[in-house]
Amino acid sequence: MDALKKISDASLKQEVPEFAIGDTVKVHVRIKEGDKSRIQVFEGTVIAKKHGGISETFTVRRVAHGCGIERVFPLHSPVVDRVEVIRRGKVRRAKLYYLRDRVGKAAKVKEQIR
Image 1 (cartoon, helix red, strand yellow):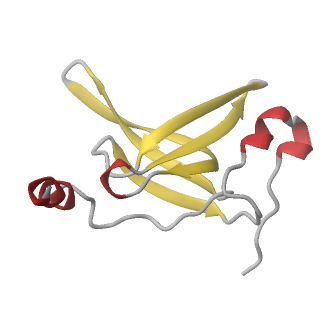
Image 2 (spheres, rainbow, N blue to C red):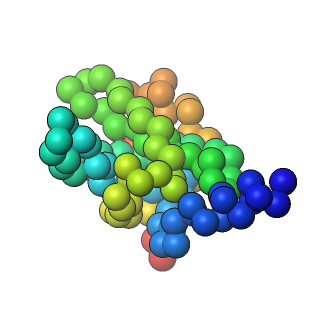
């Protein structure tokens, strides 16, 4: 068990971005096409964070052309280049799955004033 813990601790990212549920973020994702790689930006609202440690994931939702798109990103994956926080959200829930049923302005999250 200690060997697994050492391996997982070694593969954790040193710079973990600070973001919370309800924040609007830009996730810079490294995409490999053939022998080339490029960075694609996925911007949306964080609706969930799950697990902890090496297997921690977060779900980002956006609406593009009237269709909701959700992507789950592993936090410590080398595919995720960096996460930028665009705005802080004011929410009272740990999971924002109710945003899936909302349309238009009702699907927005209020901004937190700090």
